[in-house]
Amino acid sequence: MKLLKESRRHVVADAGKAHLFYLPYSSQQLRLTLYEAGSHNLRPLAAYLRNFVRGLASKYPFWNRTRGADHFLVACHDWGPYTTTAHRDLRKNAIKALCNADSSEGIFTPGKDVSLPETTIRTPRRPLRYVGGLPVSRRSILAFFAGNVHGRVRPVLLRHWGNGQDDDMRVYSLLPSRVSRRMNYIQHMKNSRFCLCPMGYEVNSPRIVEALYYECVPVIIADNFVLPFSEVLDWSAFSVVIAEKDIPDLKKILKGISLRRYVAMHDSVKRLQRHFLWHARPIKYDLFHMILHSIWLSRVNQVQVQLEG
Image (cartoon, rainbow, N blue to C red; front, top):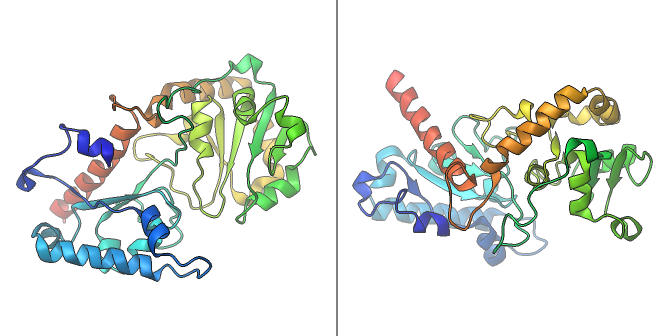
């Protein structure tokens, strides 16, 4: 929101000249403010957003012109999709830019909604500080994962490959101190050919973007996940997508990728990395511009369908 407000190129004072309208809300703030710990009840969050949209519709004419089709929201918290469920037009018509882009739940609509990369900025003042990795010839680890074990996929991954069962497959729940003393988390990613990105509670994971930052080919294990920017990026050129049922064959699949193909994928990671980078002042083709492009393209496609209809 801060970058958008500071952008003279993308924001206009005259609403009549606007192509899209941004709904300024935070799913994270709703969680912190309205969620009762341990209740598992997200209805108060959805009700708040419903009433917020109703207020906009009664105060301004723009929502009612398209029933929300030219409005968009951005939410990267896992609960983001569920906060939109209490308002029919918000859920059905508005463009939802979400990190939790799960096509199986009936909330995220591929082709209309936008899948966002999930990012973790370790040093906000220097967001590019750790970007980069070792060349292919110096990447001694086949595959790496370390993280909390939750959701349906990670326990299966740990059962088959976890905690030192196979030296090629460095898979841990949390990185043991005896291991991290020799090589920390980031160093593991920079030294690995493939970085495993299994879903947690929800389909997306910041490890996908971390892998790209450290020039490690991401291995995405999350059925029904609509990959970010897939309307313009060919993920098969720089990642490996594994079906959840194929986790037992993970090493065989990765070993089956030829060196020539891997080098091409690694080169693609390095070329496409710029599309997943944040900058304090946005630059051409960076993550800020990619998100806005995806939202704009979604609206263009909607209008095109209406014209052809």
